[in-house]
Length: 324
Image (cartoon, one colour):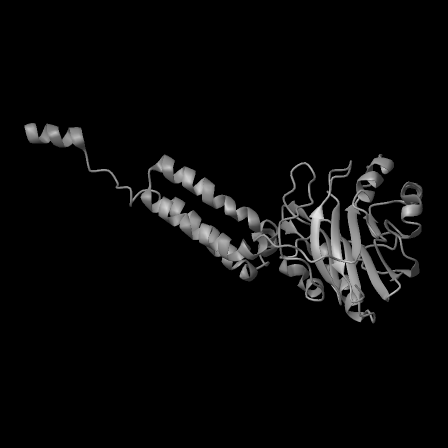
C-alpha cells in the first residue's frame, strides 16, 4: 500500500534537459538550412524562395529568440541547436559585416524613391544635396513635381531629363534620353517607368538606366512577384544590349539583390557586398530594394541618407569609373 501511494505521488520521471525542446531545436535547424541553402528554395509554392531571400538577414533573429525560448523551456538540446543558425549566419554574412575601408569613387550617385505623396520637394532636395551628388535619380515623380525638383536642385545639378515617373538631375551634360519599355505583359502604355540617358563626362560617357520595377505583395497566392520579375527581365535585356562599356543601373527595383528571381539583371552588374543598407520602409527599414549598380565601373560604397517625407530612405553610392 505504501509503495502504491508512493508511485501515485511521484508519477513517471520527467524529461531531462536533453529531451525537452525538440521542436525548438528543429526550428533552429530549419533556420540554419534556409540561411545556407536559400538559393535552392523553390519558387513554385507562392514564390517562397523570393520571400526567404528578401528577408534573409532577419533569419538571424532565430538565435536570440531560440536562446530565450530554450531558457524558458530549460532545454539544453535547444540551446545547443541555436549554434546552428548562429554559425550559418556568420558563414553567410561575415564578409558583408566585416569592417572595410571603401575605395574612393569619382562619381557620386544618389537614388531615391521620392514617393508620389511627398509634399516637401524642398526639404527632400536639401537631404539629397547634402550628400554632394554628381547625379540624382528619382522615381515616383510626376511632370509637375519634376519641375519643382529642377528648381530646388538649381545650379548644383543644372542638367536634367525626365521620362514618365522617373528623372535624372546631373552636374554633367546629359544626352540621348530615351524611354525603355519594361512593361510586363498586359500593362498599357501609360505605365512609363524606365529611362536611358548618357552622362557626358570629360573622361568618357556613362550610360545610365533609371528604373522603377513593379511592387510586390503578400497575398492569398503567396509572395506575388510575377509582374516585377517580368519587368526585371525586360530591364536585363536592355542592359545586356547596351553597347556602352560603362553602365549604371539605379532605381527602385522592389527586390533585394539576393533574390534569385531577378538574377538575369543582377548577373550583368556588380554592387558592394558590405553592410546592410535597408531602404524600406523608412520607419523601420527591413530590406534594401533601392539600388545603384554598375557594369564597367565599381560601386565602392553605398549608404542610406536621413529620412525624407517619402516611405523610402535615399541611397547614395560612390562609383569608381575607368577615368578616375
